[in-house]
Length: 74
Image 1 (cartoon, rainbow, N blue to C red):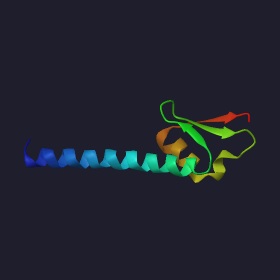
Image 2 (image 1 turned 45 degrees about the vertical axis):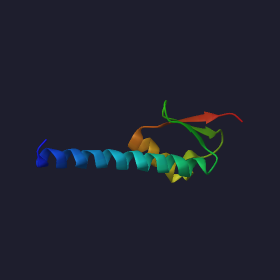
Image 3 (image 1 turned 90 degrees about the horizontal axis):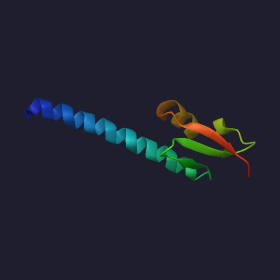
Image 4 (image 1 turned 120 degrees about the horizontal axis):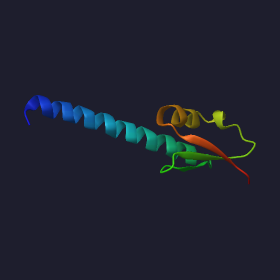
């Protein structure tokens, strides 16, 4: 690899790493509120009757990472 290809590879790797860190941080902050999420199926489980949009993390995960919202009966 020449220097230019290496620089492009490092930039792409950094962007992917930052996106994964951002998603992990959003999930961590959401779980602190007692909300569960299944990352493999990209589903956020919220108790029925709660407004999911009161958590900014839900909106960001839904818009940026295409997570779905599932209401659960508790």
